[in-house]
Image 1 (cartoon, one colour):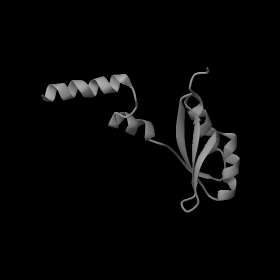
Image 2: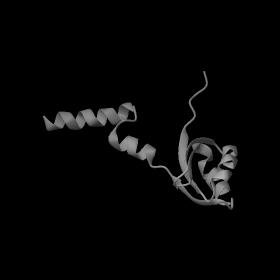
Image 3: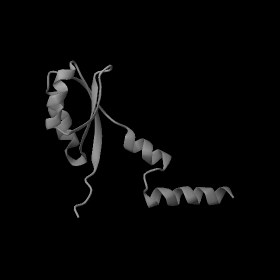
Image 4: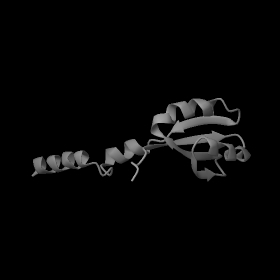
Length: 96
């Protein structure tokens, strides 16, 4: 069974929604907001910087934001990472 590929979220603001179809070349388009004219694009973590530079070259792309989703999950301790859970249990034991 192949290993799970780490992915990163990019929020790409566009000038017109017609061009969102072109974003499919660069990654998986997960969500498109018609009102605010942005798309959430999932790309592999190892190629995120390269893909961001390619997207910046496109005329219809206004702004690109790297989603803070991973940092928020780690901050809340919901990552499923056993190290993060051990840190939480240590701090809870110290409180007792």
